[in-house]
Each structure stands twice: as structure tokens, then as C-alpha cells.
Image (cartoon, rainbow over all chains, first blue to last red; front, side):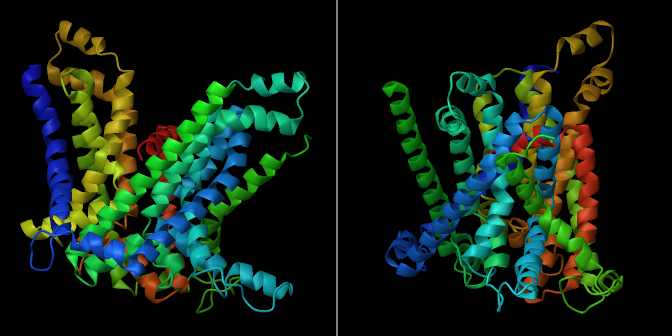
Length: 280
Length: 266
């Protein structure tokens, strides 16, 4: 088979699907988002979003929930990554397996498990009530805390692996060298380990943030009707209100604000890194 | 014994927490009570028997299974062909094609679902099995392309040449040399596509017909109305099924390698 014919033939099926199920639909969605109810060209849907405090409030909540998720994932994930980087190959494999396996089980099911744990009659409340630690059930679910717990559970693995892989490539003898030269463990952590794990942290933060911004299932199941985030509002406009142009505009606003914030973060992180390099 | 470090303790806690949902669901499914409680009261299979009284779960299970199997086969086929074109033939624009093929991974699946719904409504595919299938294939192909490309990066194409020189037909060369060497990558791509499709909610949400829903979606809708041990028993069945595939995946390819690839994609 000549290469002139082979390449188009081999690529045709995937490119046709890409075009028909992704590129054309995205293009149509862009066109629709720029239409008003008389089907004329207008920025109405985008302007509505900027002017209406209801929508800006939703966007701010989405960002807030995502930032909390990033913070929790980082605080809990960083020590795990450090532990993995220092562990033997076998232990590393077991930890990787245990952190990844639940990831391949549907998010709906994992969220249900959390509802069983965190609910008003859930495991945590029943336990704390029975030992007399609290006298009325804590509200751990159907609020922003519930959503952040669910999202952290969903995305912490990305943070752990991003940091761990960046640390794998670092020479472990560096911390030893620091210790030999008389640095305390805390000094060695802040001067050696932390700076070297920064690329991994940046990657993990970006990843967890973008995934949290667009999460739909967890906010619906663990936030209930009180914690509506942008993806949930977009879904409602498309499926319940049937205002497709607005739903389309909300989708692009979600995409745009995520890209913008990630770009801003990357910019800040990079300038900081340059400063570090040139100051030393 | 070595003194446990702070990082070690936090690691154990985190591993417990991420596995907690699964550890909680299975005992809850065997409760004899009519509601979810802690600790589960009594022991019975009544909530497993209840599954068979709910045709929507049985029907949606079959829809999901068919969908996931066909998606896995199609995605593996289409993705492997594309990866071959990219790895074997160096052509102008192959970098662009490569990033184009992976681009669905950079867009949230919710947005892919909405866009597909808007477009499919125009061309009459909305609410059909074919439409749902096409969307699942779209989100699975990038994973296969990535996996097979990685497999091909260490593939020695002179082996194929050697086969031709010894007089083998192209079909024979492909079947006896190329395919066996790429089998782990292709099989992993297939299983990963199966799980991607079988677990999907956010794309299916927009594309299912009212009467043919998928299992995760049926659980999702049920959970928004009622929270009872029935969800636990159905979930336990799905967990068991997923674990079988996860173990195969770990044996064939290794979850860490698979995941490394997944996390780069976003």
C-alpha cells in the first residue's frame, strides 16, 4: 500500500468522527451562543452573564469551590507524593494502585458512598452522636463543604501523581547532601524538596482546578439544589429551560474563564520561577 | 521497626479516604433494614433481590454493556489506525493531526455533550443509540491513540521489512508481527475505552432517549429522588464488575503507566 493512499485511509475514520461529533458541533454551539431569541446576531447571552449578579455569583461560587478543592488536594496530596518519592519500587506500586483503582469506578457510585458516610444519618454523624461528641448531626452534605469533599476525592490522584512524577526525576541524594552539610530536616524541606517539586505542584494545581471548574455530577449529587455551579446552570438551561443559546454561551463562558484563570496562574508561576533562577 | 513518618501517616489516611466510598457501599448493600443506616442492621440479600423488581436498572445495564463493548471495539480499531498513520508515515502536518485527535480531551465532557446534542438535533441523531455511540467513541479514541502511539514509539518497523523480505504477505506481516507486539497497548486501549463508556454520565446525559438510559445515568437519576440501600446493591454489582476490568488492566499494562497518560491529557 503506497503511503500517499495509506495515510488518508488510516486517518479517515478518526477524523470523520472528530469533525462530525466534535468540531462541527462546537462551531454550531458558538454560532448559537451568538444569537438572540429572534435568531439575530447578538452578544446578548454573554452580556446577560456579565450584567446579572445571579450569574456572576454562580461563577464566583464555581471558582471558590474549585480553589478549595485545589487547596485540599494539595495539602493532602503533597505528603503522599513525598512518601511515594522516598518509597521503594514495590511500596510505590501499591500506593499507586490504591490511589488509582477507585478512579476507574463511576463517579456516581463514589459520590453515593460519600453520601452514605456524610449524610445526616450517615456513618460520621451516627458515630459522633453515639460517643456524645456532638448533640445534633453536622451538616456535611448538600453544601459547599460536601461538594469540595467529593471533588477532592475525585481529583486528588491527579495532584499526587503530578507531584510524585516530578519528584521521581529528582536525585534523592540531594536531600542527603543537604543533611550531610548540616541542614535541619525543615531547612532541607524548604530549601531542597519544595523548590524541586514546584513544577509538579503547578501541573497538579492547573489540572485539579480545570477539572473542578467543569465538574457536574459531584455538585449535583453532593451539593443538592443549594450549591449550583456553572456546569449545573448550563445543564439546566439546555435540558430544563430549553434556552439553548444561553446554555451554549454559558458553556463557552465556563471554558473561557477556566482557560483565562489557568493562563493567569501559569504566568504568575513562571515569573516567580524566573525570579528564583536569576536571583540566586 | 522504623518510626512512621508524618508523610507515611497522611498517605495511609488518604488511601483510606479515597477507598472509603467503596468500603462503605458493600456492607451497606447487605442491610436488612429498609433504609441506609450505620452500622448496617442485620444481614440479607433483599436489596439484591429488589434490583430485579426494577426493570429500568436491568434494561439500562444491558444498554450500558452493549454501548461499552461496541465503543471499546470501534475506538480500539479507529484509534489504532490513526496511531499507525502518525507513527509509521512521517507526513507534513502530522503534529497538527496529532493534537487535533487529542483535542476532545481538553474540553470538559459536559460541553462535548451539549455541543453534540445541539448538532445531533439538527441531523436527527439526538436520542438515538447511534448518536450516543458516536459520542462515546469520540471521547475514547484519544486514549487509544495515546496508548498505541506510546506502544509504537518503541516499535521496530524493520521487523515488518524483514517479514516482507522473507516473502510474507502484508496481511501475514500485520497479523504475525505487528499485532502481537502491539497487543498490550491495544488491549489496554480497549479496556480503558470500555470503562470510559461504561462509567460516563456527563456526555450520555444529553444524548440518551427517554426510554433507553444508561446504568450510571439511571443510578444518577434515582439518587436524586431516593436514597435507599437499592443504590448500594446496584453499585456493589458495578464495583465488582469494574474491579475485574481494573485487575486485567493492571496486569496487562499497569495502572500507573495508563494514568500517567491520562493526566497529561488535560
